[in-house]
Length: 143
Image (cartoon, rainbow, N blue to C red; front, side, top):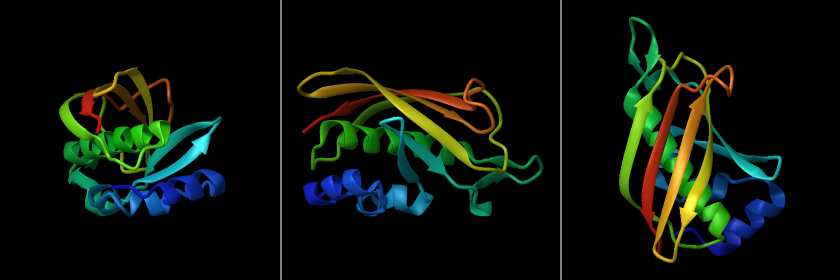
């Protein structure tokens, strides 16, 4: 559960590290969050440990998927101003190109939010936002 005082303080200061620290997998991955144009932007800084194919080299697909799922969770917490972290119902991921050994960025869009379920679309890219590395969509159970 994310503490509401952390969320309010994070929105005022623009420092979301306290929120991310409360989600262990997001913290493990090194997910970063900041606001750009009034909307969250998620960053997965490059770490050698995130490489899955050392011959290319390319980011591990599980790291990309985990990053996008956590970005969606954080986006829902941010948008709903709720202390409850939603639970994943399902998650679908399409890889469009290999993730290069560099930072990965993501934006999320809540396509529908009801009282109990939210649908979120996620897009990840590296060099150019118009050339996504991966896209995903998920359904989340809201508390």
